[in-house]
Length: 220
Image 1 (cartoon, rainbow, N blue to C red):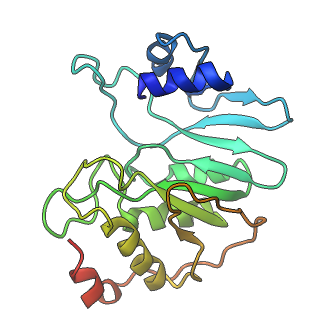
Image 2 (image 1 turned 90 degrees about the vertical axis):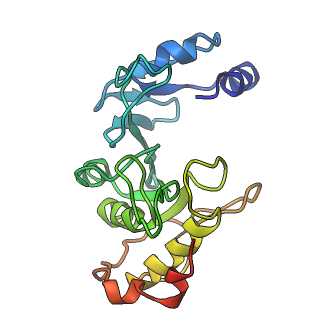
Image 3 (image 1 turned 180 degrees about the vertical axis):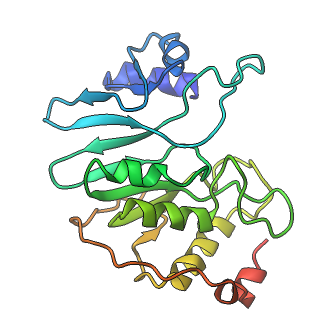
């Protein structure tokens, strides 16, 4: 919601902009055209796909006096060879919304937050943000083939070290028994070729003993 950036993107590309209800008024102030939609709304794309506004879990506030007056959302982009899921800025909440998104079809690629979760020593999650442990639950709930971690390392929003989210994510995925490379991070400026959808294997439960390792305890 950085308005100068959104204005530059609009002036350069004239993209289709879809957002949750209430955010459209803010974005429209830049001169951009935008569609504000409720959960469950489908917006058709010219290539035959569609954007579906889906549920996630957060609170909204931009000017201190507008608490929860805009709809926080995630998005499913339906495509012929597997969907893209963008979780947005979210906490885990009731944990049911990943399955709701997966009901729209196989998720070929998920973009899931992994950072800004530690506000006291050793904390592994917070109500409005997902840490790597919660991110693995979202990944499993989506039945996603691949995922990329987002919402980390750009702005200082919490107290974990900047590289703690990807390092902890590697330990979480190892403990859950996933093959390497299914859910990780991509360096800024690098491209990522998304493989075709493949049915993921079921994870094993995250054991406390597995995560109680020297590598995890060393993370700040």
